[in-house]
Image (cartoon, rainbow, N blue to C red; front, side, top):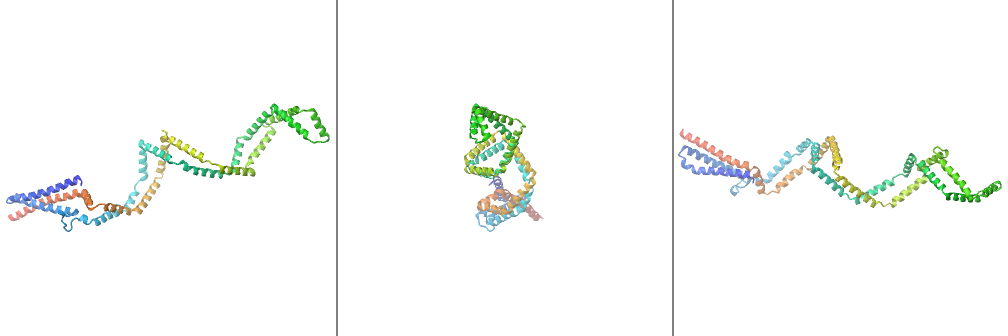
Amino acid sequence: MSTKTKSSKKLARYSLIIMGVGYIVTPPFEGLWWGSLLHGGFEAGLVGGLADWFAVTALFRHPLGLPIPHTALLPNNRKRMSNALVSVVKNEWLSKESIQEKVKHIPFTEKLIAIIAEQMQTDSFRNGLIQLIKKLIRYIDVEKLTPFIKKQITSTLANVEMRKFLQVISSQLINEQVDKKALDHILKKAEDWLRKEQTSHRLGSVSMNIINKIEADGMLQFVLKSIQSLLNEEKLGNIVQNLLLSVVNSLKHEGEANREALLLYIRKELQGISDNRELVESVEKWKNQLLAKWEPDQAITKSLQRIQEKALVFVEDKDFMDSYLIPLMNRILDSIQENNINIDHWIQKQIAVLVENNHSQIGNLVQENLDKLDNETLVEMIENNIGKDLQWIRVNGAVCGFVIGIFLTGVQALFRIL
């Protein structure tokens, strides 16, 4: 019982005691006019105080423990009182219509944005958000992600059209003039090889063997025999070497006809790579064989672990919050603000559906909480909340009875005089 209730209960008890004591001590003074008035007042005050005490007590328990009819009203009518209370709460104070109507006027997004914007400036919010992001990153199981990543990579590579891939490669090679660079590289290597001393010997030996293997008759045979008698392998090798070096040097000059013709041929071949059916099929087959043997699980797992570690380091950086996270959150809040009407409408609709489907739970909750209380606890709870006012009824009954008693006694005395 609260302190205020105890204090008012004591005051009510004292008022009743005062009326009782006054009623007892005033009879010897009834011969005096003021004694008669006081006795009548105390008598009426005692009756009024006792009557109100009985009425107040009868609400919660049997007065003096006696089972007097129509007393202990609250315990005896608990079920009816509970049903009435549940009905009032469910159908009047917290009716579906009243809740839904109230919800319609709540600016959810405005309140939410204001709270978040204020919290974003506090260190506790910032530190808490950083810790939350780090926990989320650590919770990611990269080993479980590996099969999914592998499947996506394999599927993507398997669906790549090698014809288009080769077409892209050929276009890129031509755009970057790889044909010229490749030709110049080959010519440089050829020139370096031709200028070697052993190259001359090899060319002479090869050329002489070719001449020896040529079968000819008549004048051609005579010419070949003449050449063999005039030239040895060394001289023939020098002639072939110089001839080839001359060809190479001519091909190195920009604008030279043979060079341009050779480059044109190379470009046409590069452009036709994607139309070479056999080549495309071979590359496609090679791709499928490679994917079938490919086991990237370990490499993918290690890559994901490195990404996870770098993400944690990135989040812990002092500039992460102000440079990345806060701007991101501001953009999100701006987006929410721009769509506040739709968002509020959606939230209100969800709450309305929730209230519609679960409104009966309000009454059930009140009923369950009331059923958990025994009669003594329920009575004490009600007394703690309204007991102060009820005790003042007793005080008012005694005081009013006292005043009315004096008035009635005075009227009676006046009538006797008259």
